[in-house]
Image (cartoon, rainbow, N blue to C red; front, side, top):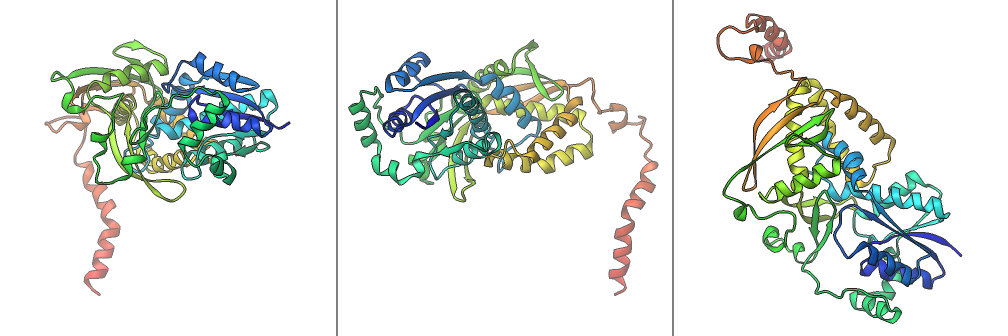
Length: 403
């Protein structure tokens, strides 16, 4: 009998997939990785998997690890895919694979099954993680097989199959879009969002954020502290990585912070439309940038900024466990040893304003920067500096003038 691990969510698709695999002779070990997604009671999900016939069920809480070891290193990179996307789903997938593959090792599974389709990015993220962490395991994606698609052309066939097997599922009214949530963000796509004449922020029923128009008329201030690039405290109180994200989600959410609507380029080549909300991470990206402005020197900042799109692209595509990204992560941790400080922000109807910033490692010297008289900067020094900088331009200019 072939032993497999299944990325199990407890919903219709993976509940159906669990029974379908058992029908085909697999010994299935279901693995649910909790990253902050909502849903039915975790105990009920576990019991359902046992009733369906799972050999074992593993419920793994990886929320702290997601924030500390995956999201916060991306934060240090200020990594955003194609502009505004903070990579909330992209960051989560390699961690899910890591946890499932750890279970695969425990139960001696030779197959890793996931429910991603053949059109999206997640299939790449799941499989590339498996290739790196367990190159000996076979990755099986039923949605990419004709056998699965013939068995289940649509939702009605899945519901009928579950009914025949006595599998309890909630047959809710289908939303005009699909969503994916973890503690970092919620993504919305497909359905009515595929129409470009529809306003995404009007269509989507946001759950982490209120609309800026409905946000309080009174602004709110929040301070965020960092040590070596890592967020460590909110409003003067030290928190775990997970607690920081959760608290900032609540604070930012009530002021309408962190909504975007974009057309993005998927790894598989097509363009897709996505609507996202990420209030806590949006606040962290903003606050971190102000501490970096104080503590990172110009050349290091510019080098980081030039490589940031490379990191974002690698994370988006699923190359989390590549040697190249390992090296880049070592670089960013070294560069951010000095990024310690605190920032106070004002939040008001979707807007963020920086009020104060401080750092024991600040490179800002008011005596040098001041535009007032005096100070420690000798303006006479600029004469020779600029003449040297202009040398190649003078040579080129003379050549053009006399040609």
